[in-house]
Length: 230
Image 1: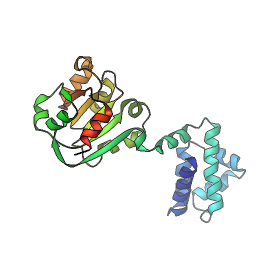
Image 2: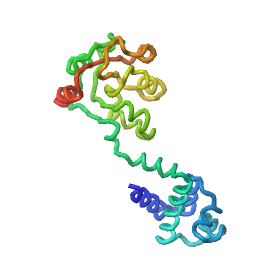
Image 3: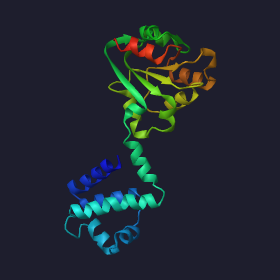
Image 4: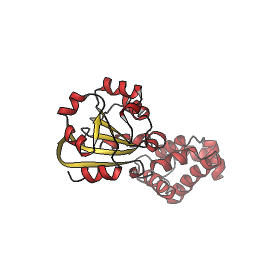
């Protein structure tokens, strides 16, 4: 996986109109000084400065390869925090969520019926809203592990969709995340929880944001079987 990231960085430098600036960008992203890099590569600081300032001819593949390997090696010696972040970025989105688009629109009321749901808040909206898809979300993984850059991908092609959160206990965390997000789903389903177990703050956020909150005891397989026919 890291070899793929290294190749992407090397390719970006090689194809850049300003390869020196691109090298400097990646050195700074990794939090490495010119002195550290020069020492690791056993070259002078002025050589690093010349490459970054484009005072030397564009670096060849050998120089670029040494540079990329060096920044990863130095990061590893420092604990590997940047390498870890880049590794997380490369995880497929399917590890955190599944996005499904419908071939046609469906009313939220019919959606709720298909998943055996019970509306907890904003009943009036549930009667009129149209839905064009849903996203099945592993709540703990999304909140604790998913890179922030993936967040917008939760919405697929359109925002008029339902977020179905699995692995929840009270529903508070998913609703807090939605509260501070610029984009909002049309409705939220909390899987495998009773209405009276939903967190009070989650209910308040749902009412304030005007996002219907729904609970269901259907299994994930039952929901997918019903919804993926649309």
